[in-house]
Amino acid sequence: MKLLKSLFISTMLTVSAIVFSQTSKLSLQQCIGIASDSSLQAFRAKNLYRASYWEFKSYKAARLPSLSLQTTPVRYNRDIVSRYDSEKNIDVYRQQQSLYTYGNLSVSQNVDFTGGTFFIDSELGYFRNLGTNPYSQVTSVPLRMGYSQNLFGFNAFKWERKIEPLKYEKAKKEYLYSTEEIAGTVIQYFFNLAMAQMEYDLAVENVSSSDSLYQIGTQRLSIASISQSDLLTLKLDALNAKNTLKTVEVDLKRAMFSFVSYLNLPQETDIRLALPQLPATISVTTEQALALSKQNNPDYLQNQQNLLEAQREVERTARKAAFDASLSASVGFNQVADNLQSAYVRPLQQDVVRIGLNIPLIDWGVRKGRLNMAKSNLNVTRISTQQAQTSLEQDVVLTVSDFGVQQNLIASAQEAKELANLAYNSTKQRFIIGKADINSLTLSLNRLNMAQKNYMVALKNYWLSYYKLRKLTLFDFEKNSSLACEFDQIIQIR
Image (cartoon, rainbow, N blue to C red; front, top):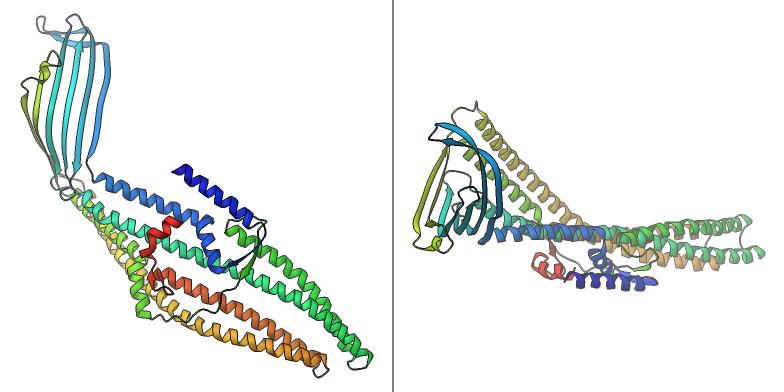
C-alpha cells in the first residue's frame, strides 16, 4: 500500500512538472487545492493528524484483550554457593550446577470502570539439578484466573476514556483548521502575484500608450497644437513608463518565485492567475457564526481537554495524598512432578489472595503541598479557558462584521474601477483630438491605476475575511455545509 502511494505521489509530481513547465492559468480555488496537497504546511498538517490517529488507535487497542508470552528459554547456573551443614552445624561452600526454563502465556483485559485488570494465564517451568545428586522437576499451572485492583488509588483508564476520544476529535478539526490556514496563506501569495501581474500589464500598456501619445504630441507640435513643454512632459512620461516596466518586471519575478515555492511547484513554473469573479452575497449573522464556532472550532475542544487534564491531575494527586490499598486474587490449579506428563495429572487447587496497604504517616506536608498546587493549576486553567473562549468569541464577532464590510467595499471598488476606466478612455480620446490637456490625461491615468489597485486589494481582503470566517467556524457558507461532516472525504482526497 505504501509503495502504491509513493508511486502515485511520484507520478503526480511528474505530471505537475510537465503541466507547469509551460504557462498555466490557475484560479484561486485551484491554487488552494494544490497547496492543500503539495505545500510543506500541508505535509506538516497531515503528519500531525496521522500521529494523533495512531495515538487514538493505540488507545482503542489498549481497551481490547491482550495476549502476551513471558519466557526464560534457558538459564544455566554454575557457581559456588553457601549452604548450611546441619550435621556439623556450620556453613560450607558447595559447587552447584542447574538448568532452568520457564514460560507464561497470559490473556489480560483492562476494566475501565474499576481501573483493575482481569487475567487468565498458564505456566510451565522445568528445573534440572546437574550436581552430585542430579534430579529434575516440572511445575505447571494449567489454568489460573485472577483480578488485581487498586482499591482507593487513581483510575487512569477512566480519564483516558474521557480525554482520548476528545483529543482525536480535536485532531480531526485541527487538520481542517490547518487546511483553512493554508487557504489564507495561499490568498496572500495569490493576490501578491496577481497584483504584480496587474502592475506589469499596466506598465506594458503604459509604455505602449506613452509612446503613442508622444508620437501624437510630436505631430501636434508641428501644427502648434501643443506647447514644447507639454511635448517634453509626454517624452518624460514615456521614459518613466519604460523604467517602471523594468522595476515591476523584477517584482513580478519575486512574486512568482514566492508563489511557486509555497505551492511546492518546480521553479521554472510560469503561472497566469485568473482573478475570481465578484462573489455572490453571503448573509452570515453573528449568532450563527458563534454557534458554528462552538460546535466546530478545535480551540473549544482544546479548552475542554486542558480542563479535563487539570481535573485528572487533581484527582491523581489527591489519591496519592491518602492511604492506598490494593487487592489481587487468583484461583487456579498447579502441580509439580519429575516429568512433564505427571505435572498435568490431578493438579491441586491454587488460591492466592493479597491485600496491600500503603499508609503515609509523616511526610512534612509534601503530599498536601502537591495537592494544593494541583488545585491552583486547575483554577488557573479555568480562568485561562474562560479568557481564551472570550477572545475567540470576540474574534468571531469582529470577523463577521469585517466580512459584511468587505462585501460592500468590493462592490464599490468594482464600480469605481469601471468608472475610472470609462473616464480615462474618454479623456484619452479628448486629448487625441485636442480637447484635453496633458494634466487631465495624467490625472485620469493615475485615477485608473489607483482604482484597479483598490479593486485588487478589496478582492484580496474579501477572500481573506471569508476564509478566516471559514477557519473560525469550519463551515462552508457557499455550500451551507460543515467541513467537519466532509472530513473523511477530504482526508482521503488529500
